Image 1 (cartoon, helix red, strand yellow):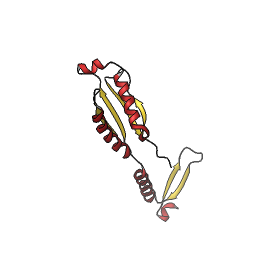
Image 2 (cartoon, one colour):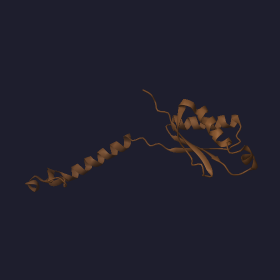
Image 3 (cartoon, one colour):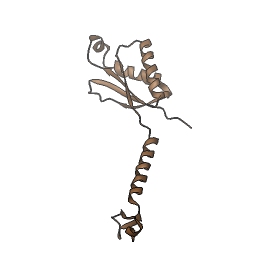
Image 4 (cartoon, one colour):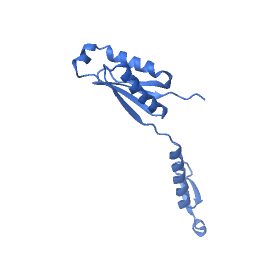
Length: 139
């Protein structure tokens, strides 16, 4: 019957009892599925992770310049990873253990409502970092 009409018998659900089959043009069905998948992929928004490095002993003006770049990334809808290298010169060690969390708190305060703190690095990692996600747009 299907072959007389130039169509195929396609099994849609093999797990059901009895199995669900349909008489259709299989090539056209596969083409429409592929087209639907491509359309869904077009509408999907991908977010990138951008990274900004900050030194632990950064001056306020230099920090403002780095934050301008962070704000630009956040406006584009990208997540931003702000990293600080914790080993190195004696100045970093002289600042003490509280300097880096204090700097991160200051950065989060300066970012304000433009972004939200998403995650922090583990305490035992050599490179300390925080991830800032763009703030949700309220409609």
